[in-house]
Image (cartoon, rainbow, N blue to C red; front, top):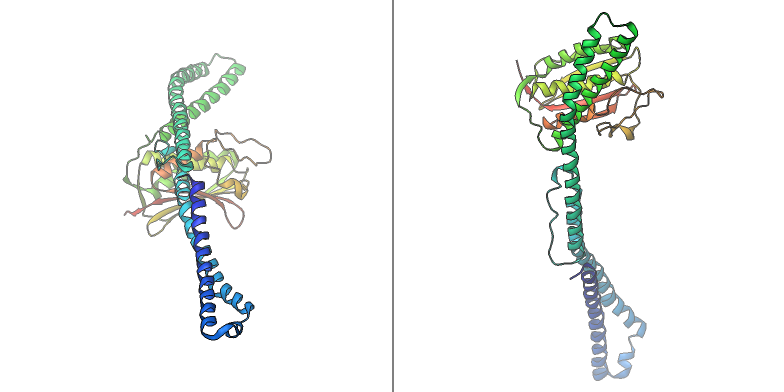
Amino acid sequence: MTLRRRILLFYSLTLSFSLVIVGYWSWFEFDEQQKIIVHGGVQAALKESPLQEALEIILFGGIPAILIGITGGALLMRRALRPIEDLTRVLEKTDVSNLADPVPRSGNGDELDRMAAVFNHMKDRLGAAFTQSREFTLHASHELKTPLTILHGTLEQMLSESAAPAMLRERVSSMLEEVQRLSTIVGQLAFLAKVDAGQLTVSHEIQALDHLVREITEDTIILAASAGISVTLSACAGVAVPGDRMRLRQLLLNLADNAVKHNVRGGSITFSLRQQPDHACLDIINTGPLLPPEMRSRVFERFFRGDISHGTEVEGSGLGLSIAESIARAHGGTLVMDATADGRTRVTLTLPSTAHS
């Protein structure tokens, strides 16, 4: 039965039931009048005015019928629309990770069943498109890696030749920086392709997060020196998390690099690590331009560039924070960007933790 017919049937039953109640009460009133006429005559029957009889029919027949009709109609409509709610819940949970899972179908051929079939076809096409895109990224990254390595080595060799003119050395140095940047982007794309394919695996050995944060802080001091950015650390001892040291280091370096690039000359960066009952929290606060609230939730999207640094373009591929967020998720953690009370940008990393000595 189609959804339209189902709704019409439910409302027809509700209306019919309401009419039966009104009709029954009207017949009951008529029967009472007949009995009064038989036993007491017409004069006795006329003692009750027609207006009073109409009010009794409305009060004891019409109003209950309306209330029952509304209640019954609401219940029946809810039952009729339940398949739509179920389908909506399934579709809300659809993302890249479950495109291969079909939407359940009733098989009765109604509108919802046909809609589920259309959605399944759409999911199949999206899944195929994502697979092709992922495979292309992996293959392209693999094919580009070797030529870039060769080019990088050649440029380094040219740069090491002392006989080369100064202008040539300057151009080679510039080309070498671009090759390094391309190599980084290729590596990032290959990493994200593995994430999409569900191939990102991390170990869960206990890592001293406080030690790792200190190491990253020292690296950040070097990265920020040329821009005159001061770096400070506030960390409690004994903070440990289960995880992959290499991936955690990559995560923290990406966050530190973002704090340096999206900062102002002479600004500051603060690392603040604290232990909560069942998780560790790391705040990385910088004095760079503050993103509007509606843009902060998008900073972890791939290729998102929320540059508001007064028209100046910030170097980077727009993939660093996306990679960081993927690594955090792989460790059961979260990344959130917000603002401090004094208007600074804060990125908070939360990871499940355990104590270490």
